[in-house]
Image (cartoon, rainbow, N blue to C red):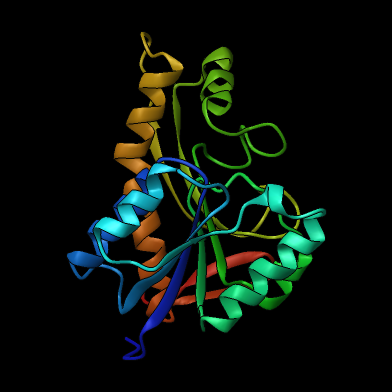
Length: 213
C-alpha cells in the first residue's frame, strides 16, 4: 500500500450523495490514503457545497455559464486541479461536458460512477432517472452501477468495478434509483478510489486490472 497521500478532487452538479459516501468512507479510513482536498461545483447553490463546508473541505464554483465555450471551461477546470496538485478526479453527479484538455492532463485518473451495468443504458442521454426509466421499460431483472475511467467517449472508458442490484416488479424509477445508490454506488465508488489510491489499478488495452485479486 502506498504511503503517499492521494489528493482527490470531487466534481459535482447537485445534491452530492456520492460525495457524502466518499466523505464517510474517508472518515472510516476506507480510501486507502486518499483524501478529498477539493470539491468543484458546476453551478452555485448546490447542496453538495454544503456537504463540503460541513466537513471542512475546500470548495469552489466553476459555473459553466460563466464561460463562452466548453474549451474555455475545460482549460480553467484542468488548470485549477493541476494547480492544486490533484492526483485523482472523481465525477460524482457532474453533468457538465468537458473536453480532452481535462483527459489529457489526468489520463486514467478520472473516475465516474454510472447507475447501470455498462454497456447497458449508457451513453448520451442516459443520466439521472432516464437510466432507470429505460431499465424498467426493458423489463430487466437486474441493474446496478459501474465505476469506470472517464475517456472522451461518453460512458465508454475502461470498467473498474461493477455491482448488480435486483430489480423488483413494483419498482418505480425513483425506488430503483435509491436502491442502486444504497446497494451499489455508495459501495463501489469508495472502493474504486481506495484501489486507485493504493496503486492497485492498471489499465491495458482498455481493460482495468486490479492487483492483489
